[in-house]
Image (cartoon, rainbow, N blue to C red):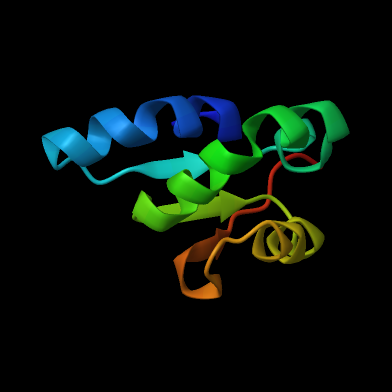
Length: 81
């Protein structure tokens, strides 16, 4: 799924259908205060059920761990320049 919001929306569907979910966080979806307030509980569900969570930087990996993502589910894939 592209972006944390899309992953959070798809997590229940993928879980119910037995489809492994890989979600790619890009930036605002990992740091935006309004997004985190609104989607925080859904992110926790996502982290519990995702097969892998992709971050674009080491700092974002740390942020996602602070949000509740298990470190063993994280992958680092550089994006951009």
